[in-house]
Length: 159
Image (cartoon, rainbow, N blue to C red; front, side, top):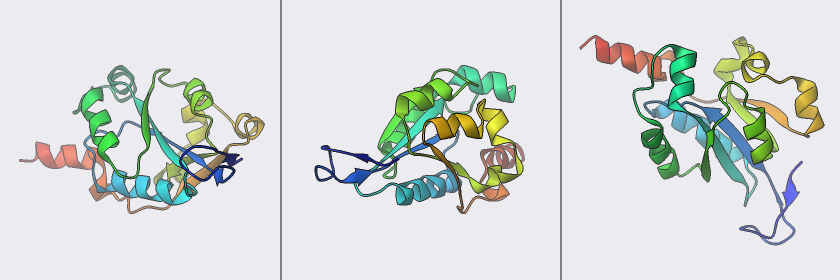
């Protein structure tokens, strides 16, 4: 559902809005790789919008607060050349209102989520996405366990 724009692209050009949501704690090469792939999905003039989880949601979901605060994580994402906008995912586990606010054409998630139930995690189903003409895309990127925030925390704890 690419839309016509009169903004950064030429008037009438089709552009895509790409949604990437997450915590992005301790920003690392895996995060950068995912966002670079999101940028490739965005058409010229398209936008990559990151819905960033709050500190409170991360603490509730993971059982511990993030290492970096929301403002620190937001600053790093805003400095990333692949990201056009960062907004607070202020509804926590229910990302639907944030997705409705962004109105993306594509929700891009890392291929590492293929083995998990992303639909259940996000609180929506295929019909909900179809009603909004949103495509869910698993993005191949250079993610590995060696690039996860959890692994970095483990490495730090071993020192």
